[in-house]
Length: 374
Image (tube, rainbow, N blue to C red; front, side, top):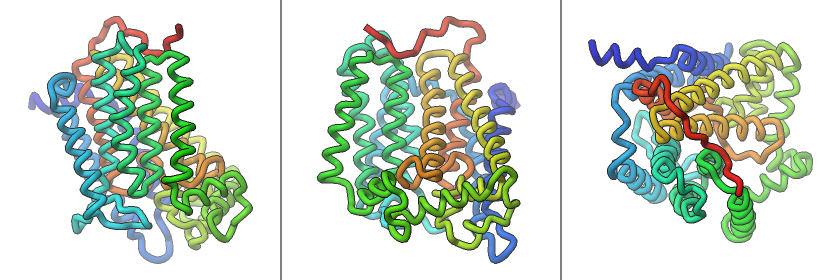
């Protein structure tokens, strides 16, 4: 009984309700009035499992992550999983990124994002007053680059870029000098040039080239982006109706349950539905930032902010590639896209933030976390 009372003490009905509404909108977008509904039926199972995991993740007291070696041990474990998947992982759509466990597949790069958030939150919370020292940017970057590199060579460029955005967002929130930020971008540009020459596969280069000129190869590398923009535009204001999206249901738009679900959603729900989608997502991010502002310490504040950065990165990268503003990278929309591992990870992150809010102080001075200028 006491555990249940503690559970509901940290429960945020607005945050959880918005997340569940987003999953429901994804479900109806996957539904088809003709043929089977494999993705719809499987997603129902994943949503149920993810919700239960969220409730279970609200039980522990996560203050143990602030100190000791537990957080670093979890980081090393996922580092091992990301190495292992390169040797024995299942190859899907050209990427060796998941373990085939029979009934379901486990993609370690998804929970690795939560692990990276926890590691960076601990690191920066311990060194908040010294964040102006550039070596802390380098050390934190090493943590991120270990995950980034292993995910990139799977190859899973979408998850890799999200890991980079998590690190970039968290160093901005932790407080970084303007000149150090410029150095970071310079190093990033140099790294991109190096990867273009020695790391990018031909199809990845083709995607970036097609991004610069989407109509140059409509039947080849630009096909997905072209069909996606058609789907988004054809929805107009009110949409074609649930289950009546011609681009998605007639298979013109590939992977519409995952990589292009925003385009499929916009086609069926129209601009009106897209505005509702943005509103619900805004509620999720706003509530996470509210929990961050009320957090008991810098660790919890940085962790909740990191989860918000994770969702925002996924959301805008996915939408950007669906409307032709970004290269196609294969990212999901939080709570909306089909998939078990990413959905469980998202609800796990929500559950951990809610658990941390149980011991948040009602009134306390909040140290400023912002970009520091010299």
